[in-house]
Amino acid sequence: MSEVYLYQLSTQRVGYLSTRQTLIAQNVANVNTPGYQAVDLKPFAATLQETAMAMATTSPLHLTPTADEIDPPKPEDSEGAETTVSGNSVDLEGELVKLGEVNRDFSEANAIKKIFHQMMMQALK
Amino acid sequence: MANNDALRASLRIAGSGLEAQSARLRIISENIANAQSTASVAGGDPYTRQTITFEDALDSASGAELVKIREIGLDSSPFRVEQDPGNPAADDGGFVKLPNVDVLVELADLREANRSYEANLQVAKQSSDLMNQTVALLKDV
Image (cartoon, rainbow over all chains, first blue to last red; front, side):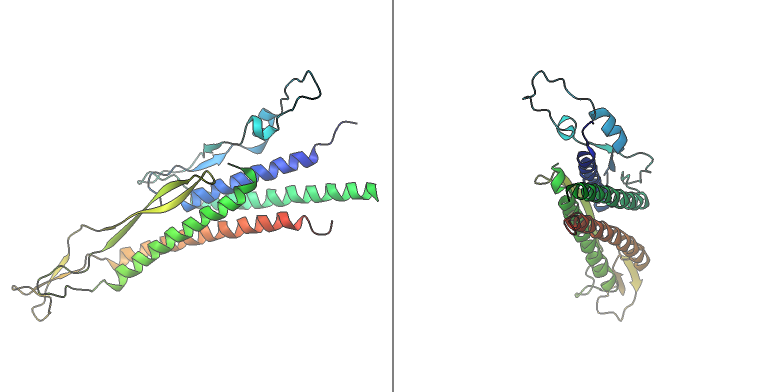
């Protein structure tokens, strides 16, 4: 049986969503800042694909870096936003939609973690 | 950006947004309140409309970009002039300078500030909600 990475995966997802929440907060706070460019993260699946590659280890004592250390989530300029005369590209409605997405995904990741934990406890009892 | 601090950082950012927008509301209310304020001396300049601009500022502790007030300036557009010889602020020719405040413009600005404030408030609420969800994982273990 291969190892189960569900805990690690959902923890990474929560980390990703927290960072995305920070960027949304940043965009919303700067909605009236002249010249501010809206930022967003790459989709989680794309980030996961890029970081899934593991380094070769010649000894079991070697430390393998976590996915976060290899490639921490980087903000990207979000697409499709209209730029106003003042050079601001924040789309307030779009940001609020993203806020809802983050909330949903965060609940999902936490629910999975909880269920997985319950399964483990069942096996132990 | 440390991930475990990301939610806290987003709370701080939303807080800076609330602060900036409430400062903007204060400036707007000062403009509206003084829309008819003339000079205290005859022929003098009346209340000048105030403007507020924002800029993004990097918070080195969290690596996040907060918003802060760049400048509270004065509107340089010309004053309205009315013929009103009985006014104590009238000059020798009977002309009174009135503030360059357009209440309609201020009200439109007020609505926008209100909308931005609400959006920031929603972000702050959700950030604390996500933190609570994480803490709730510890329940019923």
